[in-house]
Image (tube, rainbow, N blue to C red; front, side, top):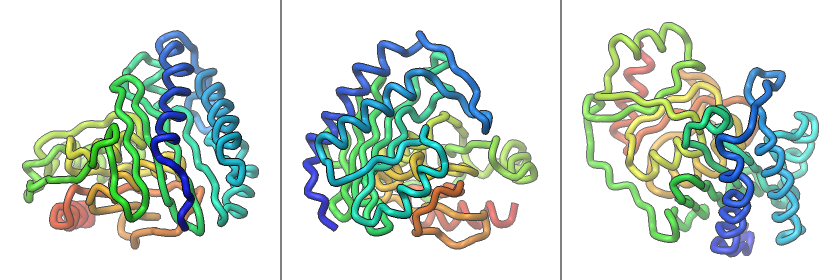
Length: 268
């Protein structure tokens, strides 16, 4: 599918809304807990409302699925989205945002015919806009983004690992006998994928992420030349079918590293 969407226009739309609505609220809002224990702020809701209005006004043929919508509405939108559906995380990294930690972003992906065809992830604090179109490569602030990671050993890598959502035995082994040189956990899945795409970290493992978390960032990573994707279980097959179910994210900046990473995890 060729969605005929000008990426400069889309990037400008996302960045302007985030700069207007997120930055003035940063360190200024309180969070409440949702039913699943995750946090919600007034900024999440304001961003979602504005993104839905702006996207549908500019591209009226596509509907919008937002993270903060009811689950039944999300499922109905995805089931009827073959002709084109925006999938939006209005504030990825709400816990960071609410705590005053400057690592959060906005994720906007276009899904059509069962795959992500383009995506934008914007970090308003760093002023970094990552974007990608399927089959056409990835960009950072309009410049081509292509991985050039020549590291070939796990012990020479930085691992981006979210321990909270991993099986306890694997988390314990990673904490006590890690195969990598150093480890981070940053708190925004969309930016995780983009930092992988930029080569700032080399390994990734996250135990539970949803389509609005990984849609745009995962495409940026793939189009930059990274290796990996989503799994239903750690020993399962790579999943290409889109779903609202939680998925495991596993990746590395090249195929050899990914094979070593998965072998270590499988035998942990």
